[in-house]
Length: 131
Image (cartoon, rainbow, N blue to C red; front, side, top):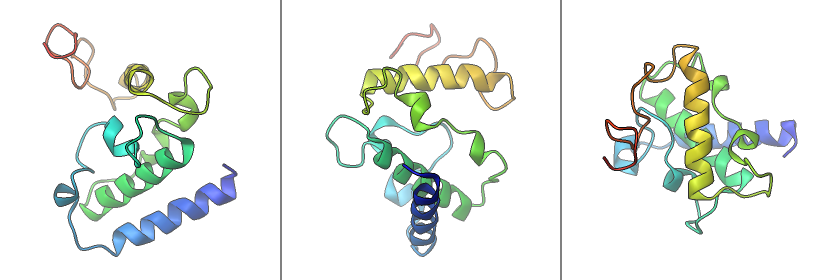
């Protein structure tokens, strides 16, 4: 996606989301923590395209802004290129989880991620899913 098209898409999504009166909690997203796979998989087909990712991200940012969250570090979020680890143009659930874990590891050094040694989101105390 070209930078200008991305900017227009983001601004359009932001304007649309800001015009809504429904809160993020009622819509089922926009809370604290990383974006979920299901939030990004806008059409529910089990994979995330670049357009889906940036639309979901713009909506999430707009919702968080509307809730009063600070937006100072909004530009430090993962890009689609960070998620598409194998470069095939779509991101599945396992690839998404792996990329998200890698991004959280990088963010720990900036004070944005969980403290060192803390389990990743969705993992139990042992660091394994569901434990």
